Length: 125
Image 1 (cartoon, rainbow, N blue to C red):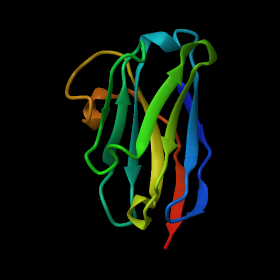
Image 2: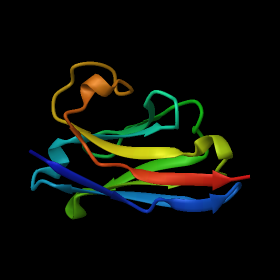
Image 3: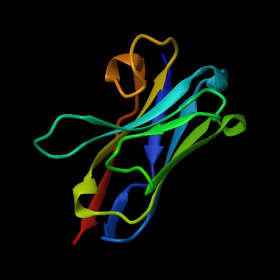
Image 4: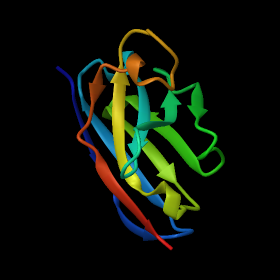
């Protein structure tokens, strides 16, 4: 089992920024591709961002493209989500996810094997 622990969530005003972190308890962190997902109240969980094992490739949902940036530091077993120009509709619980073998698209939950417990992000208008 791989443990993922998110941090960095909180309350921020619209237009503000937050940086989420996810620490992965696995020595071979560089063998994992990583993603961020979010779930707003009353809605299904949705894809936010993806980063490849090396960090060379990233992919974003249209709703966050240009505002959010995913990155990773393999030496520290961490992945980050820098969120800027936040909007009230970004309010959700944000989840970090890790995958080992490709089974589907980067944006599909089915591609990921391990999930964090989530961190709440609330954007006030």
